[in-house]
Amino acid sequence: MDNRPIGFLDSGVGGLTVVRELMRQLPHEEVIYIGDSARAPYGPRPAEQIRDYTWELVRFLLTKDVKMIVIACNTATAVAWEEIKAELSIPVLGVILPGASAAIKSTTNGNIGVIGTPMTVSSDTYRQKIENLSPEMKVTSLACPKFVPLVESNELTSSVTKKVVYESLAPLKGQVDTLVLGCTHYPLLRPIIQNVMGPDVKLIDSGAECVRDISVLLNYFEIHHSRQERDLHHTFYTTANAKSFADIATAWLGAELNVEHIEL
Ligand code: DGL
Image (cartoon, rainbow, N blue to C red; front, side, top):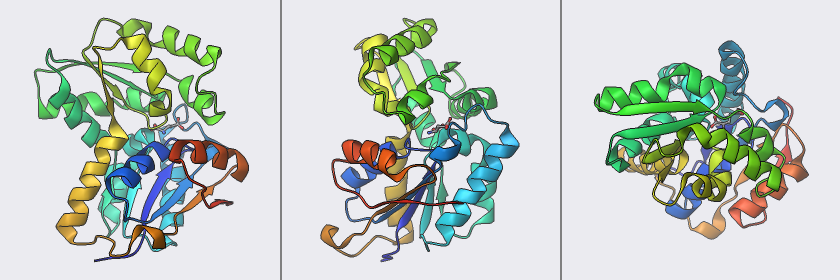
C-alpha cells in the first residue's frame, strides 16, 4: 500500500482525459495534476524548450511527494520520457507506448493513422514504436496543430471546430481502419473526429490505454492506495487562469474540483 498521490502533467487541459480514465478505472487513487496552460501549446515549440518545460513540471510534482509520474502529454513523452524515466527512482509512465500497442491490437488491415502535435509527428516516435513491435504495420502520421488551441479555449463543439477537424483529417479519410489520438487533448474532440472519420474507424485514446499500464505498475510494485474514495483530495494546478481551467475540468470530470493557480 502507498497512499501518496499519482502525479500527472500536461501542457494544459489535455491530461484531464487521462485523469478521467484513472478516476473510472482506479477510483481509489489520489491525483495531483499540473497543466502548463500559460505556455500551451507545446507542440510547435523546439524540442529543447519542451524538454526544459517538462522537467519543470516534473520537479513541481516531486515537491508534492508523488509515488508515480504520468506524462499525460504525447509531445512531452516523445521528447523527454526516456530521460526522465532513467533519472527518477519512482515509476514514470508515458502515453505513446500504450497507444502504439493498442493500435496494433485494434487494426485488422494494418493501416494505422496517428494524429498529433507537430513535435509528436516530426519525432516519428509512434511509427517507430509501432513498427518495432510489429514491422508489417503501415503508419500514416498527420500533424493537427489547430486542435490544441481550440480545446484550450473550450471550443469543443463550435462550427469553427467542426470545420477545422473536417479539413485537417481529410488526408486520412478512407486510408486507415484505426486512428490513434496521439495527443491527450484530442479525446475532448472525439465525437467530431469520429463523425469525420466514419463509424468504422476505431479511435485509440492513448491516455486511456496508459491507465491500464498504471494499474499494472500499481499491482506490480504493490503501491495501491488503501483509503476509500471519499477520503481523497485531488488537487489540480494550472499556470494560467484557475477559473478557465476549472470550467473545462469540471465539465470533463463531472465534479467540483480543487484548482489552484501556480507560478513555476
Ligand atoms: N496534450 C499534449 C499532447 O498530448 C498537447 C501538446 C501541446 O500543448 O501542443 O501532445
